[in-house]
Image (cartoon, rainbow, N blue to C red):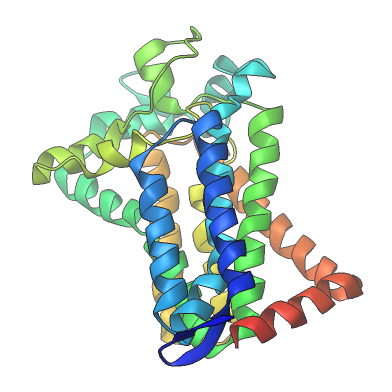
Length: 312
């Protein structure tokens, strides 16, 4: 039995059952791990719509399932807070940051975050907010471009993106660390129930009279996951694959966004320079590791060939 779809091959009843079972399993697991949220229904509706709309959209959503899996893993981290497994580092990063990158302010040494809190401007508030908004649409937009133009490079980029995140998650659980804004508001005292905070990005929201960043950070999985800054990793992956694919002037834009996000992370007190450097290192390690795996593993190469055939 099959169901005819517009502009594409039919979906078999077996595939229908697999997709339905996956959706039900996701909802049940989500309910028990993180509780029911409307976002979960929205995600399923988007997947179902694209899967059944046409052959093109079905291939698209199957390709982007790599990112869906990443998002689900990230969301489920709420059920397993890293502070339950390791002590959170509060003063160590702050003092080391001040030692390496400290800046003089009124006769005393402060961290770059503290310096920019004093010397920030409306222009920089808006600019850094715009840069920080790019960490989601730029990688996803770039992935969409690769999907329609270079399927194999799309798979390489997507899997590298997930691998870098997994490396970052390992550090989150082995070295829980508080962000700079936490020290600003709570000092060196640990409060595990601390919710996410927009920190310096609140100025962007206030200027435009919106709650954009407030809504984003209310969905955060873990406050104590500042090291490494994966916000700093993502655009670097884009830059690498942009240069690899010789995208010309687009790479100037990617590099500008990357540097802008690095500065914004510090300016808005979401990360230390040390976190940014760790994010850069994590991206470089993830890229190198993925390239090594692809070169050495026939099993991975075979899987990539089969997956590429599905989304062609």
